[in-house]
Length: 316
Image 1 (cartoon, helix red, strand yellow):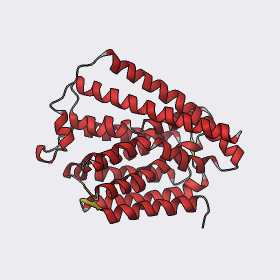
Image 2 (image 1 turned 30 degrees about the horizontal axis):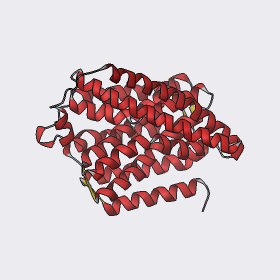
Image 3 (image 1 turned 180 degrees about the vertical axis):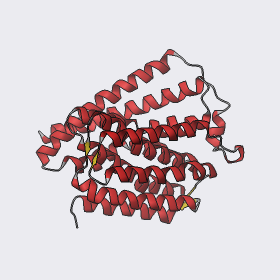
Image 4 (image 1 turned 90 degrees about the vertical axis):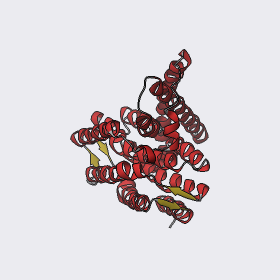
């Protein structure tokens, strides 16, 4: 029985991630075709689109009476994004460079939104009114991102390249978008069911599975985007993707399910996950201010995640 649910977990996670990928690709093409600003596409569609698995799985978790998965998933995903994805990206690229636009816009924002999320989560539950506040904060950030105009000299190379491209839409783009959404719905539904079943069979808290297995799995799109960008020496895309994703997770992925139900936070997430997230975010901000993330920092990030995971499973 355990083997069957593990297989279902892996298959549903694969469907969820693939559905996210198809949705992201088609949404990016549609955004370009209708004339959205390339900078907006880079910050919103690419950055937030990679967080679709977290959003889909969080909504389904609430609908399936497993609200404790939501915050654990977000906290685990944001920790993984910073410590593992940024860490591995820095190791692969040997040095990541933080652009001026990311420092001006994203760095203060991730510090502010992270603080707001921590304030709402510190009492052990996200209430309806706190969820509304998180969504309003997200909308303010989104509006500022839309009107923000980066300096041409500091504009990321891949964003500048997008200006010369305005693809023609075809039926395939909309079919891919719809298919991607179906994959998100089906994959997230069976992912949450398998997590609940495995939690009972293995006698492991649902929150622990969510903060590790679900969080890592739903962060695979960010991992793919950032590591590919790092190997291509596109530091701005590699890091910018994490900024956008973590902001989206902390505000919108928590906010939307919070409108449906209060979101309790399990003990492991509250006592271990949140403090580690604070440490990871502070390290990320400090690295951003220095405008360089060197290979040594990348190794430190990955080692810190290994310590976090070991502590989570009481290995020391």
